[in-house]
Image (cartoon, rainbow, N blue to C red; front, side):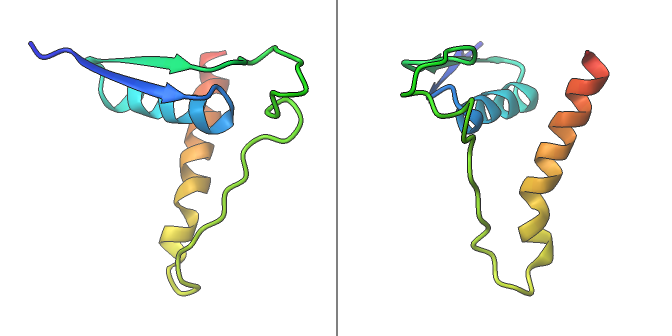
Length: 85
């Protein structure tokens, strides 16, 4: 069996979301998060407690489905989190 390992740089909104999605898609991988700060850190260098990730679609105006993909992904993660809590 092939061991799959992925390193995610950063533990902000984007890094943690990436790690979560990778683990949900492929159960046989190991995800390692490398970061200077993690959730709960209140350092001024760690922006996620204050700013969070910012994302903008680069899809054309008529590509509605492409524009909605991130909203659907974050919505599914939120629902999963609520049901697991």
